[in-house]
Image 1 (cartoon, helix red, strand yellow):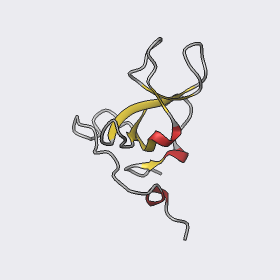
Image 2 (image 1 turned 90 degrees about the vertical axis):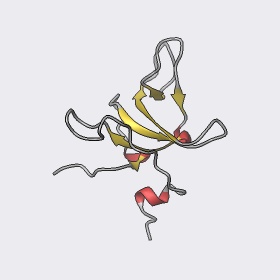
Image 3 (image 1 turned 30 degrees about the vertical axis):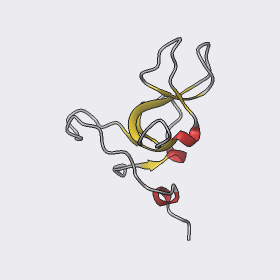
Length: 102
C-alpha cells in the first residue's frame, strides 16, 4: 500500500533520524517556510529534538515542537516535486491536517 501524498500531522513524523520536509510556521521572523529536518537524539552537541539538516557541531539549528506544523517524506529520485520545494502548509489550524474528530 502506498503512503498518502501531501502534508501530514507532526504527531506521525518519524523520530528515527529520517530526513523529511517540514513546514516551519510563520513568526515575527518571517513567513512560513519549508525546511529539511530530522529528529536527533541527545548528544554532546545538543539535546534531543528536531534539527535542520543545515546544522553542524557548534551551530545547531533546532526547532521546538510548536514551530513545526506538518511534515512530508522527501521525494525519491525521479519522483516529483520538479526540483523545487512544495509550498508551506498554510492552514490556520492544525486540526485541519488531522481532522477535527467530530
